[in-house]
Image (cartoon, rainbow, N blue to C red; front, top):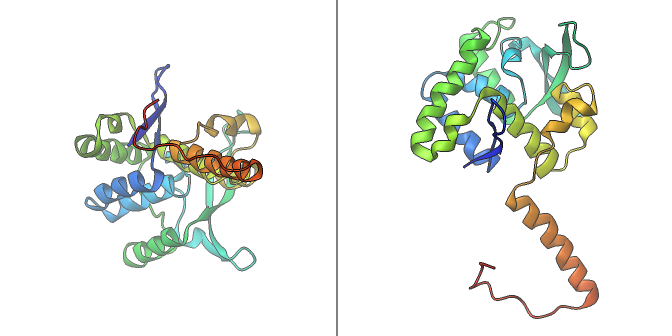
Length: 222
């Protein structure tokens, strides 16, 4: 489903939850249109790129780090440390499956230095808008509110809140220059995450003080 995190302003902010399940549904819809659209959604939803950063990377921007044992992609985008409009270059972490997808796509359709997604930023956003209409019919009306930036928001929230990746690491790969800039992405945890961490802590606590009788799960409403 899509979780609405803030609808108090002019823009409704959403999170894909469960992250992987909902993102895969979006990827399937855009994949049925064009391979290029799938790459764009990969970059936003699995790598945290902003919509206006998607059109920068090429195949030659992808590199393997021997020391890190992972893939990185050179990205040029928003500089959150200033208001002068300058772009800032960073290397963002790329999941293995996205790196493989980039390689397959570029081998078939791009020269090494050509942009992977060779369209205007407005077109990237339109692709998400078109896909969300299909998903709203299939998976619920809340998909109607999902924007391209919600893909980045979902990526950041998943790794920061659900997986507990350090803020400094996410600032580095996501292009945030200050804690103030990344703070809005420290959203509320999902029910699954709350149950996981609190249940684990409670089991440990009960183990130290002695187990009592287990609750009757047949009556789950309290």
